[in-house]
Length: 175
Image (cartoon, rainbow, N blue to C red; front, side):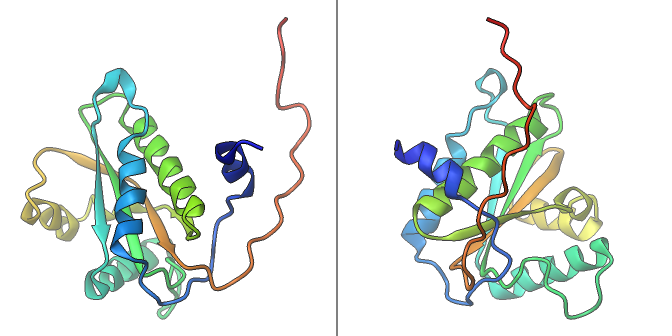
């Protein structure tokens, strides 16, 4: 089977990660795959913020937990040591779709390199907060950006689940 199609069928969300940091070369290749995602009119109006700093990662996790309404001590990133935040320029009308394609590429690339990943929401709400707006400003991110999602990644500390059976009646051919 074609390797891309195989990866699409085999990739699963990971909800338990080892604390081991993936090597930088793999992280860079995953990010590069995200940057090659299709974008409306080729605008490339997305940004990826790569968080490998544990203190920043833990602050982000805690804010995500609070937004999600989980109890103290819960990690919505499931222990993943790397968080790739995908943002889009609010002035780009295809931005949310473009960012979604970036997220898909990140997760497939991670799987192809033997790493686990999961899409975690609430980036939109995080980056509406003054703290995270200032965070972006301090990074030199100019303009109005909205969070699409977090790609939490690392080495899986659990077996990947079997894929669920595909639902019927999801394709209609008009020959």
